[in-house]
Image 1 (tube, rainbow, N blue to C red):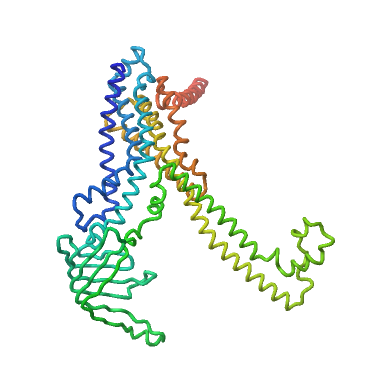
Image 2: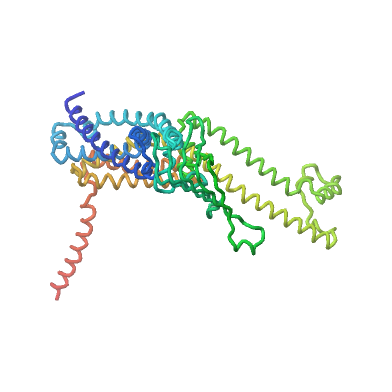
Length: 494
């Protein structure tokens, strides 16, 4: 490696490392902000916080790495152009491609490492991150309940005035609200002087033992007149044991988080294996549903169909017996029979329509799950390609604008990355809903920006500016000159 290659590579690595650390810190703070409700007020010790951040860090890399490559490329090459170092290189016969040679090798190696990271480290970190969130109350049962506020655990809202004890599992002043099954209100209220939380890492149940309290329960009488009296039952207890399902702690997660639990935790080999099973089950369910609907229609086995088939069996070819239906299948029936027949047909069509509408959502959900698995496969490749793509956008752009530092390069980097990220997100959303193939949905941003990268590289190589202002202003200047000359000729004539 020559001195020039070492110099350019060193300059880029220093800038890239600085930018990556800063952006990584910013995105980690965003992650903490998103999950602040799970961290605040639960007496998490320093080790658990480090584990929480450690498991969430790899999921930030797909956003931080491409943006760092883009910004570092613009800053490095913009600084070299601003200080006329590229001019000195070109005067010595060193072209832009030659100056980028060492960085191209580094970016290719970085892209391979990014793909390996996305295929192995991120799935493992996603699994540990989701498992840690679900099992955090099993490690320390007191974390399931915050002090001085209501904490939701499944159908219960629990509030304690004070927590004590070495593990914080001794509770004082316990109030519990049990919600209705539909979540519309509270049907049961429990108040106790003190309580104790017990759990095991091998169990998904949290045991809450209450001492010296009362239970108030609404009673709904059968007669409507008695309901206006709002009766309730009050029960006193010395000791009362409740079992809480800790799996309900993650019940409030969004659909994207639940989907991530099955998609992002798998590598490519596992995703392909899962997709084979999902596609096979999906096709079998569609065939089974179609056969069920067809059998319910009664076309092949209905009494009228059988009568028509019997009467015309001798005069029709075998291949047409199963496909031809009489023009008027009600002609030989009485009015009462026709009315009953039409009523049965209407009920059958209505029932079939409800079955189709209900199954449509189920099939749509399964199709979306399959698309999410395909998207997860392509995302691993896109992460590596994005590093190469954004480098070939940032490096020529920095050489063209000839500005280093943190001013103009940040503006260009943010605009380009927002375009890339928005297009990528938009494409994935459409692909999830089966509006595009997963390949086009995930690769949409790369397909759109690749010609832009080639154009910038071409213009930077041939010393052409970002925008040829002469091509824009010259026609306008010529137009004004023609107008001015015409007016001048008219004045001379007069």
